[in-house]
Length: 177
Image 1 (cartoon, helix red, strand yellow):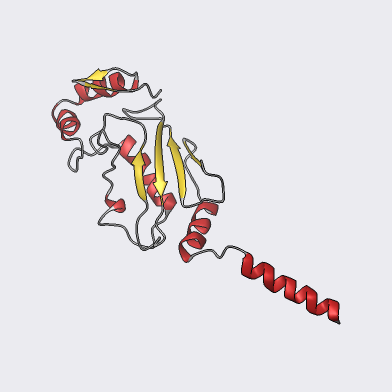
Image 2: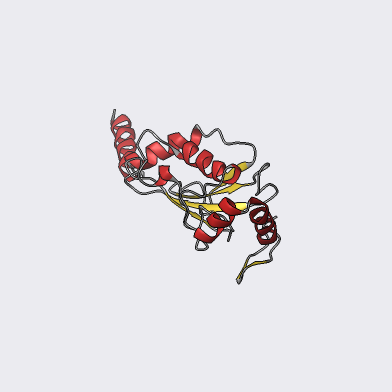
């Protein structure tokens, strides 16, 4: 009988010493376990699987202006997730109307259209969509947006030049193919 009490006491101790997961971590764990990414996208956890709140997504578009490129995005998930959208930055310098040269991303579901029913899968598909259908009507990089709107052939040339590590105007880019 005394052994039984010691076992129960040990179990309680283990439970109280175990790291309690926040609601955000539980939801994020669920979102990640249910991910259904396109074959051209992958997710990694640079700080290990113990830190689900910070991860990276690599997008390799297989169509459109950016086909053949590799674009890395960092995700920082707030403790208030899913009530706050994750913070997403493009770590690859890119010539894109909806991504500025500092990596900020203009995607409506990361701003005013975020709702708690949305998830990481939705965000990744939204990012992927930016590569297949760049939007010059809601730009962060106004120069790229104007070129896309006024001269799509020049835009295509600029994208290729940037992806190959060249210059567009006075801005240099690192190869991302």
